Image (cartoon, rainbow, N blue to C red; front, side, top):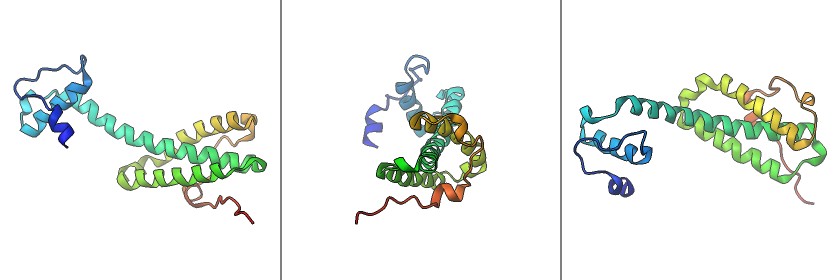
Length: 159
């Protein structure tokens, strides 16, 4: 919070245009909001930026899903090349996905769309990383959310 306070402009008339310096504009707008200077706010750009916050959360969910899906595809379609790093990547990104959903329950309403988009990209990436033809991978995601989040993919323990 101290970092924010140090960047806050001296309040008066808004001095920074969004188009010229988004970084400084953001801190100035935050200071104006905190001071209750409603008439000074750049409402149109503030609305855009607030929407972008939501889009960013959706993108975080899609990114985590995409990585889990890519590794599940690789796990299922190239079992001879399974690695411990795939197992760890699946575990890490499952945790990321769960955290994003926990912190943003509203994303559950768009989960089917996010999953479809994530799978489309994961399928392409799995094909590129395995050198298997894209047609090897199902066109529609073969996993439901429960499988994506909980299906065991454990690396064998050393004997």
